[in-house]
Amino acid sequence: MSKRNYLCLQRSETGQPERREAPSPAEMDKMYAQFNAWRETFSDNIVDLGGRLNGKGKIVTSKGEIDGPFVELKEVIGGYMVVSAESVEEAAEIARQCPGVVRPGSSVEVREIMSP
Amino acid sequence: MSTPGLVEDFFRREYGRLVALLSRRAGMHHLAAVEDAVQFALIRALETWTVAGLPDNPSGWLYRVAGNALIGELRQQSGRRRILHQSADEIGGLGHGADDRDAEDPADDLLHMLFVCCDDAMPLESQVVLALKTLCGFSVREIALRLLINQTNVNKRLGRARQHLRQGSRPRDLAAAQYSARLPGVHRVLYVLFAEGYLSSSADFAIRRDLCEEAVRLATLLAEYPVGAAPETAALLALMHLHAARMTARQDRSGGLLLLEEQDRSQWDRSRIGIGLEWLARSATGARLSRYHAEAGIAAEHCLAPSFAQTRWDRVVECYVLLQHIAPSPIHRLNQAIAFAELEGPAAALASLDGLAPKDAPGAAYLRAAVMSDLNRRCGHRDAADRFRDEALRSAPTVAIRTLLERRLHPQSAEPGIAPGRA
Image 1 (tube, chains in turn blue, red):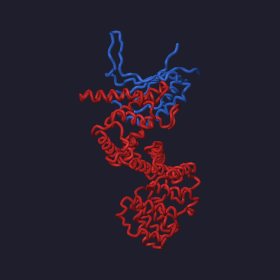
Image 2 (image 1 turned 60 degrees about the horizontal axis):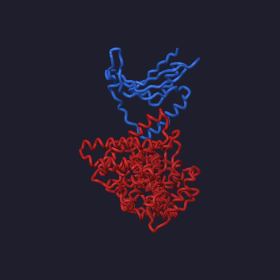
Image 3 (image 1 turned 135 degrees about the horizontal axis):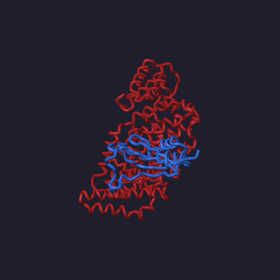
Image 4 (image 1 turned 90 degrees about the horizontal axis):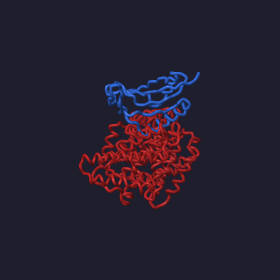
């Protein structure tokens, strides 16, 4: 079965900004190592590590532009990445194992990128 | 935690290095802003590097980001307070200092920070907490965990330290005289740091050991500089390495404490004992004998003894006499009695403790009762032994210690040995 690409969108709920305590330097050492281990494990699957998205932006519609960020939305997209996988389940598992991506107050939406 | 491309504990080490460097340049009264700026830079690094990969010079990257964040914050503060000229100087020093200071040894800033922390105008407990926060990069929660106190308490101690550092305008660097005047304070803070790790009743061995290793790291740094390269520093390092060498063997598989005579001596770290003995040799200069010399001497005797029975108790007792002379303490007296019992018998040891009342050893009530129980039992005074045993169990500060005492002071136990205090 050939691999397909999946877009992973990290969403976090607005209204309740993250109240997580900032990580300590020792925890950052751990997080950095965990992330690298994850990246190593799934190096064949990671197409684009993507990045975090700025909260500011614009929505363009046929009627014109509205300024973001989308305060009226319940959730905001905080980051994205692209992985390749055999199935949406596998892609979801890769995203789930990525340290710090799925946590209380945030979730990941995994969508197949259709190829012609 | 080792990370690809970065040295072990990179983020924590960088935290200490940058706080030391930036607070020295901006002035200690800006310590809080400096800590925030460094924390900000580390988080930015975590976010950026995981995606974009490591920059060519990670330390330089962090310095730039933290420095800019600090300048921004100080500008904002000075704008609010409308004392532009004052802070402009400070910021200027920060912005233009890069040329000369960058070439300097970053360890020099760490050393400076260590002496800033060890200011006797602050309570000792605040000095220890400040050092753990700024130099070791531990968070309030991590410090609370290591010192077995709650976070509010850590914040209070830190608050006192920061308030002290904020007071008045201070020269950017400590004067040479302040360095030498504060050296005994630095030794004491490092000693306390090590002892917190070594004696802590925290069950987590890794947590205890990293406190000890932080103390060793800072003491080693101290010894590298003329201002810190005193015989006391070498003695302190000897004592730390000699104790650390026995740390793993000191506990059983379930984390319980083992008596010295129960420890598997083959588990002692021989190369570390070697390092300790080298420092001990280097400490043997100068005319003054410090408590660290005496304590390192005792630790060395234990490390060198092939077995408990072959310990040179005469030398151990000698060192305790010295220690008691330099730094009189009921705890030293009790330990001396334990060694004395091995040398001269339990009756002589018991006699040496005549007049030591419970009120003389408020922090060591259980230790006194345990030693009295042990010595009385070995003298055949069963009633007294049982009475002191009950008292020791009642006042044991932790479960681990009570378990050890129950085993050691069991009424049926008639084996000779040392009391639990020497575990």
